[in-house]
Length: 250
Image (cartoon, rainbow, N blue to C red; front, side):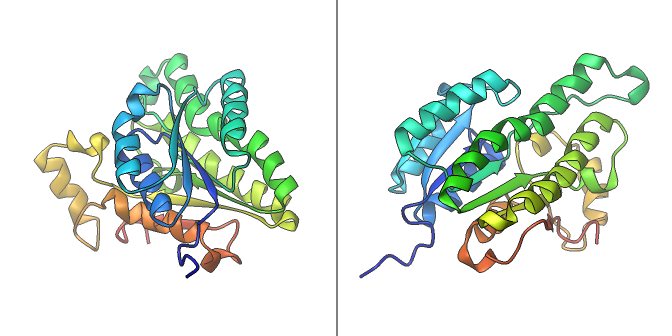
């Protein structure tokens, strides 16, 4: 019988795949039959993700590259295409924070966040889009944040990078729509990851007061939306912002 998995024979490239959202996204796409090119700054960091993917029966390979470096990305894409031959789904998930009040923020902290979170998406999307144009098929999914929609004190750099991803997504969607390439952006709210584990009980309680569903999200909540955007069910969806936040910024 033919496979009912909608990503069978597709290749998905997921950045920031070593933990948290990236790991959950890679697993969700693999469960739908995709082979996974898992990307992080080091292959060692991808060990747990690769073990989980292979335990689930997925074809998966680790690739070490720094998304903030154009030369590193170009070398990495060469290796990925040499191994898989194509990229059908690109998930720009890699991100960092360097929080601090604007009056005290160092230029290096601003640059580090912009170069990874925003410029990193540019570095990956440019060469991968070339592959997708030749294929006349592609799904580009950028992971932004509700902070890019609402801002947050002490996170001017992070908010700017994530808001930039939204504009970037809409422009890419317009440029490549005629080639059957869609581009959408997912804006997670507060999700249970390493980044939120350090929240104090008081701060967590205050956050929950602002979330109608009265809980933090799980990585799988975001991964499911990414899988939808990669699926045939989303063939007519492009340039859209999907907010996964329990209703916080409705």
